[in-house]
Image (cartoon, rainbow, N blue to C red; front, side, top):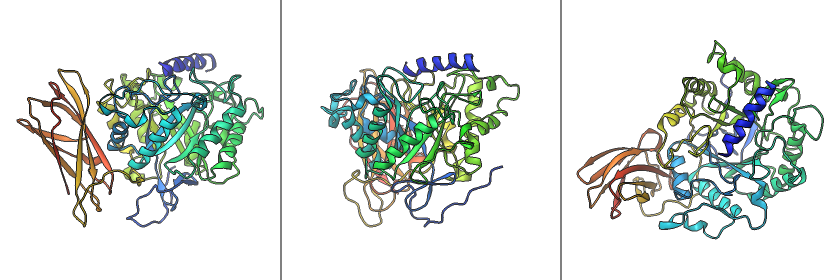
Length: 503
């Protein structure tokens, strides 16, 4: 609803306005997982604390910026099961939008289901305290978090980084508060300063009231003054030198006016790019489409990466995927972002919009039941997904030692409507050695049978189900987890005992 309104406004505004070589990779020990600690930049690459290149390959999970003041979907599922599912699908980073409303005293989340033990540790918490829990669990799972100051308040997107109700001083004070809150917690690798600046925001015009580049420098320096290890993500604007594009998607001004911060190697530029389900643009009707798109992306933001100026992160892109044009657009964009198998981390970073199915003009990776994966969308992203990062621990448990891989499995019913149900099985590496693959088995006491399953393949013989990992979620480091989900009929019945076998 919120994005549909914003995109409609974007469409109105648009109507009114209308060679790559593989970069040098840092040498590192092949057996050391990349992504540990805080990150910094070098040329077009993002590097971890050991100098190893990393690729952000993540997902947007929105809601803190709305009047719920918390990520959406907790009315349906436990937050830990959602984060586990993100990890199991191969996403390694979560972009979390928020508004300045969550800093107001007494702001509490709405729309969280605590029944059947769901979200039990969130009861009685403020919105910021819930965010703490999400960050902590994401880190435990080996996912990084980028905090996105999405809008000044929950009522809607603003063109500039401030409004009459939320002045620049409040924006900067809250950015500093967020940076301070997560100081020393390297799960939070950076902050996206403001979502989608657009007209009258300018880049390089010199007017302190509207020049987004100057504002980003002020805010970025404020963030780094309290936490100098964070990355500072800076989006584009809408119009530069009379050339207009997506809100936040025009970074043409960087060539002449780069963002310069007091701490070196901290800027990552962020572009947003969308398909026709969001708004129409002239390039979609070009007879050369989609072959024209790489040139469009080069002009607006791709040149920053290609000229080795700085890393580029496509912080939002998405589509309902219903039209042929949108399907061609997404395939072209994924190719442009560079497949991980060919280029590794010497690639564009990204976070897809969105995890949420309730994004009105794009839909989500999850379908409307908040559990089933839209495999068509997810499969488009397969080639640009990237390795996960070391977790902070705290998961798993149990015995198992030496060099023999062991695992545990936890079975949870996430919804039950009498004639059918959804459930998840969380598999955790409980050994001190890496798991290469896993298999879980359970036997129901009734007539239940699986109707569909995601993040695993399965066979069912009578009441016994055996599920085996798929390619992207078989490997688990010590303490790491993967989650499979399934739908079944009829009602859930008694919770079965699940056995787990690892190799």
